[in-house]
Length: 153
Image (cartoon, rainbow, N blue to C red):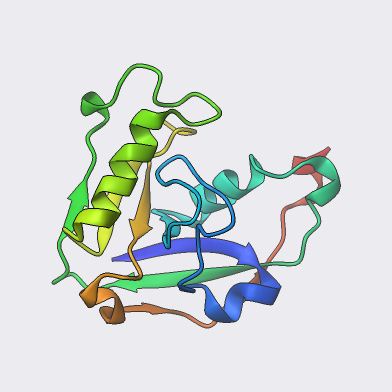
């Protein structure tokens, strides 16, 4: 399976960095947790990144990376129906954060498939860099990525 990650070009050489999630929390983890977020498609990765940018930050030097997850690796899933009705709110609720934190703590798998809060029916993936099977996940050479100017008007 191929999933996609957008990041600042400066950090793209280490897109699978073990420091992901350390600086700030996210929908599926609390601050200080080592986790890598990726999306099922490049377009979803772009949208997920874009919603966190202000207009003045929209012209950042970005890079796209393809992350390869071997088919032999099991992927655990969070079903949308198992989440509370307010799971998509911003800022994220403790309900989704605790799901991700419990998954990271439990070391049940290296990849967790979660629903996108932005696009119904699409999915993001959390990758646990502390899981023993993490070494079986690879990243492509980063390629430059830019948002089309009209999107940011």
